[in-house]
Length: 437
View 1 (tube, rainbow, N blue to C red):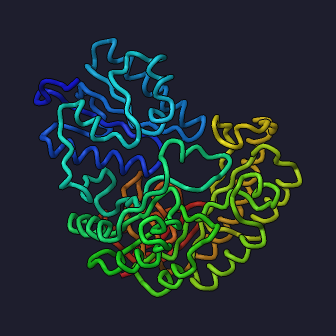
View 2 (cartoon, one colour):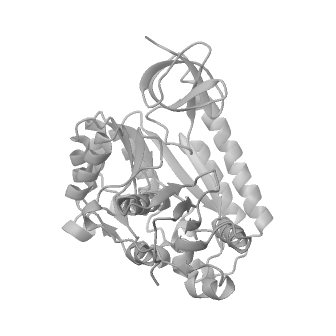
View 3 (cartoon, rainbow, N blue to C red):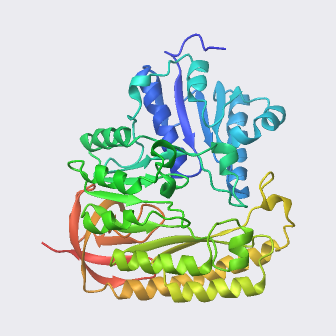
């Protein structure tokens, strides 16, 4: 049912989960604004009478956060503080029927690909002419760009294909147009994201086209940094490395989630790669793109992970010395391959293993950061926090990686600008420095 009049409504969009969800919310925001709807994103003041919650359903903690947020706003609705609550995103897509029965107070539920229906329910029109354009919610100088949707990988632990469908690439021409639009509005750094960025182009062009996409985006005038995330290691498109090495505005940075190194675990996880091939790939990346910072993630506690598997993973992390590393504990997801296996690693063991890996990585990060003392890096500044200007080098992505801090008492830096910073001290996850004129 359409809402009769949107003119008196104020809509607030709440985004949970990953950067891919954030892009979806930004598209929604631009569509509503184009319909002359008063809409905000995660507004702190409680002025909105209509709430749209863009949920995450990836792992247990994310699902819990989504459910808690929905119940919070349903409670506000019952108190008369908001009029309507709508839910979209991954959790809604995957569990729509169950959620409708359990939380009937929500006015409507929508899947990940149902933006036109959501807009229609709100009394707004889906404007096709806006494809490739969106209102960003990040600081103006950087923006995420989703280069594809969905995933064709068969990873045992992952429910993303159930929520996002098969892999669908966006055409290169569309992405270039989107990049040009972002740069026109002040974006200096674009962060390329996807469920699997290395699969890019296979569905559209019959072959992997990540290298061609990087070249095309690198040619966009005014785009100073391009950063690549979520590169699946199996069948990695090696020609992309040459482009990364040649083009100055492509960051020497690669987010490549490996998940594990033990061959039994890689096989059970259905990763399509072995330890030997993984190590060969890492060597090739570092040889072809000298100085590159590698970010990876590891998954501990997958069904069947033995102490021997974990010890092998620990030794590998010590040996590989990744510049950036994150760890997740396994979450038992129904309708996945691993969901049919016995969840035989106790939660306390999962947590202990994750903590042990992060302790190892903290030591590695400390050593790598100390080696940067005395060197000068080009830094893009994101925000002010406490007594510091806070920025990032080309080796760091927002929110998940290291940061560079400059004391406000000693220097002034305009946010969104680059500055050359000489590093004077380091901790495990932060660098401190001074502006070099």
